[in-house]
Image 1 (spheres, one colour):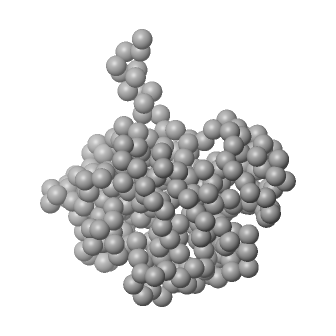
Image 2 (cartoon, rainbow, N blue to C red):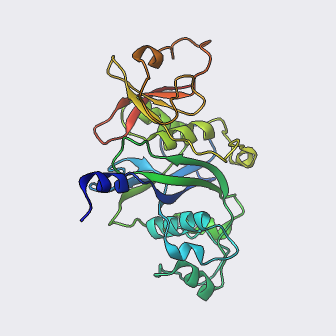
Image 3 (cartoon, rainbow, N blue to C red):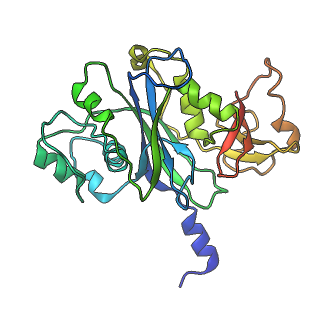
Length: 283
């Protein structure tokens, strides 16, 4: 039997996972927005990882994801998880009805389809203070108004009830406004990526999105602040301590109200009961 310290060390190792950001040129019935596209979000079921939070589809990588010699296993994982959780099959077109099978790669081979090639947009590692940690690659796939095979699937979406409560299509500003009003909790990767997408109001411009260098992952350092807020320090912030909150002074966590303040790369937030947060600002 492992000693307690060994069990904790093993639990702290991030599990390799992947997540998919899917956008589609659809109009929502919600409040008016300047955006001509929506982003697919899913709400996790109680009792699992990211309980009750809005996240992008995704999950832990499986050995079978490496079976496809023509595509990176992380991409296959993101596409497979999206299909399992929402029923959205991000592959080349087929007129057959495709149901999830134990091997996603074998399923694609059987139906003569190939996974589409999504754009890598980031890699995030859960903070070290968290019990459940993930090393997650994020990808983005933009559905255009000519992708009939994909568009036809949108109305027939389904949720994997063992893991999800619901799936939604929101514009970036709808989600960010709901988060700012303390109506919908988010986690740092989702808030950060949605804030990046919010710069683009037209789906036609999403192809020009440049996430910057992807060689190094973003591992936030979560620091409580004396005013009850919390700060997620990100690489590049002047107070970022290389992954550990040791040595970070409370005074280092203030200053977001000073626009000219240099050297900031952080999210200031109010913790939510769900384990996510409501953002005050991103620098």
